[in-house]
Length: 421
Image (cartoon, rainbow, N blue to C red):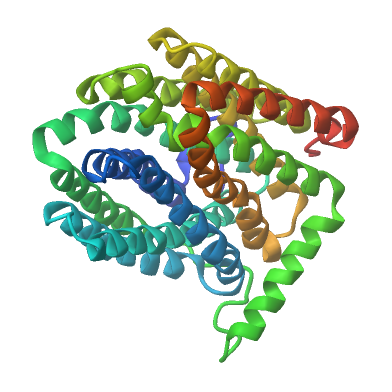
């Protein structure tokens, strides 16, 4: 495949990457629309004595889906054609989205409705965790090593440009269409994403697709164990992943999973205006993604990872230190910048360090940080029922900051890690 041009916009010269980018932007736009709608719907209809627990159960189901399906998805991405895998996943996402929308449009008074709702969340989250490693592993194949950093940064830019728009629109869509109607919009997004994948000329080049007539549980476990062992034996990859898991486990439940609850109940922002406050996370992410795109040739990725983790932790402290809209706006902006800087730089570094045939598995392991972060939402919610949100969140922010500082000080290889030509 011809790869001409250089600079941060050079990946746009390749048609397959353009289609992948459009699909990623649409997919990123659907995620906050779905997540926030799920939270606010449960918050509105659940019994008052357990509503916070059920809100946390949303993130728990998402985290379980990501952990159970994520490593398996990474193994599939290294074994079969990644484009075909994405087509199957997107088609199933449409079905799952229609099912959840149906739950929102029908009665929510029976226990069985709760059970079906959370089961569908679990399954659709699992599908997303299969989609993500395959999609990210495709970028180096499509672009080549030279353009991959710019491509990964641009991929993040597309997502973060779409995200604040989606967050801003979510509250307005719920107010105008109801919860079920707003959720149906995301189904159209998955149809469009599947269309973008369908037109790709790309086919996997790692020569493992269709080589095995049988790929069962034993083969999957073997592939997953190899990927975990690869990560464990590499000190830079291991500690980058561990820092992300710990940082996100303490910071994400409060600021993202329970963020809409904090904004609407503690800060007191009405639902129609909630999106205008929360969108600053997306704006911060977008600014960071633009900077990462401009710094595509920057070699000291470890320093960027450390700086992003520190910014995320400090911003969590600002977010939780006062019950005002100003704290939420400033905190969300920094959280978005810090998380994006850390995630983009970590992806670029790990993509550079691992060969193509194991890249899908390493991408799925890297994304375990989000799975653990969502699983932590339940214990955080249980503690919040006892301590209250205003007491618990500042404590978590100090723990997150201390963990990040400790790892950066004791594991110097993380900060010193570089991407070599």
